Image (tube, rainbow, N blue to C red):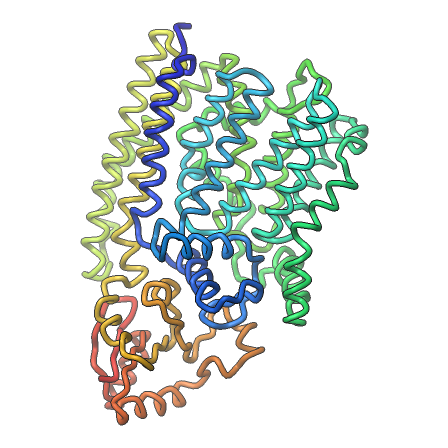
Length: 556
């Protein structure tokens, strides 16, 4: 094999700098898309505006579904840099990079520098990891800390580690699990604990339990997590039952959130998420079972991690696409080792997959577009047509990646082939995300923001959501929305503070008529069928925004 590009310090630094510039640019290249992005941006905005960093609120209503870490970090970012899209995504972007660095560093420590760079390349260019790193949701925040926990555990237990190193790595693991718990809940410690248990049973290595530094680790874990849980329970006695029972036990064992799915729900998502490295997903299936020369088996640990997380969320009564993001750091560790050791057949499968995907996007999108547009609202047709062009551009890049990678491989330049596949695949994936921005604007309703801001700039103005809740609009207009007839996900909070909403449409009508009579500034985002009802009843209103998803009306 010819000289690896990973051996050139200048090339590696140049590519890393270019990667980071593109990575951070893309954080602000799209609008915040509901639901998650609008929700967590608005919660952080309200936290900063009210100065209450303990009781979490969404739209002014108590919201206890998740812990506060991401809201804290987003609020801090807003305080430092102001409100905006890139600011709302900075935390997830940084935690994704943290995962990439952790995986690359760990592979380099376990094997060699080249394997470390391949691991970082695989994770950083994977469609799901790079994509979710640019989405303001909790899935990447917890996944970044899960990656640190896995890597620290592996490094702390590897053969030949000194006692000091072991202690420090294990304390890092405990801290990462604590931050994962503050990101999304008890799975932050329960799932890594389950993986450790399975590993010690399968590897017959019960001695590991004596090397976890339980005493110091638990003290560190509770020092990080306990203060907030204690404070919020003191201020909100209803929080512990809702958070620990409803949001954990009920959510896992039932379909209480109506987010179920078949047993194979995550299989296509995992295939999509690992692109352009699909060949190494296949290689990882059996690689974790191969006995390594060392006593401690890092690839087996990574394999158990990936399989357990996949099975755990597959049997859960609640399923969302982002739940399997923590799998990919483990797969990157296994795949990088496979790539570094040889395994050209897996590389060829990845290149072939990239070529097939490229053909599907360039030709298939154009072929399926007419049937896809049939029956779509006229308003949406240009959005689909525009997005099709972006997908075709991504398809061309996937084809180029396959061709370039194949040419390099035939010239015995395997690492150049990996580099071409990874970097081009990363850019193609980001282009696919960027092309969705016009759809994102439509989903978020940003076209109506100028007219809404013009009315809402009046002191004492009122803002309503009638029959629907707009997750992103409150953030963009910097004003909470009074819900009417539709509690959405804030039903629990509204059961505690019912005065914060209007449950009956007729009560809203009376209030709206008072705004009209008193010439008060008011804006309502209304579901279309409700708007038709208002119009039929002759309720005075001025339409300032109209699209298939909503009607925006003003009282003046």
